[in-house]
Image (cartoon, rainbow, N blue to C red; front, side, top):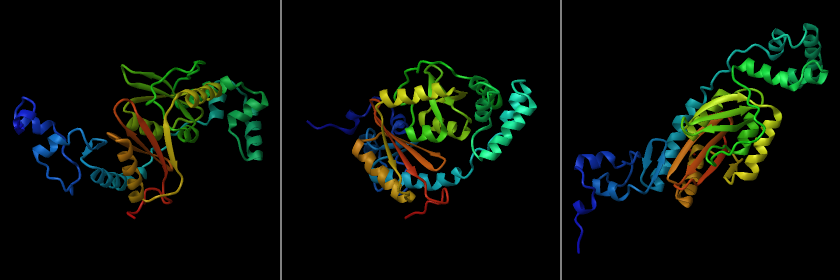
Length: 294
């Protein structure tokens, strides 16, 4: 018994079918973009952000082009907002006296290291809790001090090297509003929040966390979240990174790929239905976004 083309298509108009079937985003795709080809390939290929690529070769080309075009965006880092120094915040709140601030600044200058809040705590001028409240006031966000780590979906996490780089951990997720609260140990990094939103498709809310909350959430993630992270320390060109990602995507049968820049790292996530994902961290070449083609 033979099947006609019409018999395997859904019972809708040809115009509707054409509008819903993906079209390969590679302008040099060797496959003809016919309705037949797009129908049979609709469950194949890989999505890169909003673009669909019909084959491993087209996907690899798409990743390379994405890295080259996105490199210029990386140079436009989110500028740090102008904030009142933490010592002056504590002074304005009446937590310390001007003489205590002067002494702490002298100690910091002599040591050549350490945060002013740390020196004030060591001097006994303030408690760690007072410093945390001042940090939150300085950066315009709340304090998150819940002692018990909250269970989060495995996908709502980022690789441990990024936790250490930004000193930031996921602390609470509200699925109905898709709001993710990101706890920073010290300074809120808004460029990282943008990267998290891009990768995890959620809205982020920053907060300041005490050191014990930060540590507990790090330990909880390390012990309970079974995710895979591949860290590649050898610097690669965009062409080499695209080859690596293309090969892994084919091996794990990835259906989606997301890419974000995080300081000197490139964060890439490959996803498959059923909740599977694997993260990659690449060290960016010297000179920032100037990858080079080969």
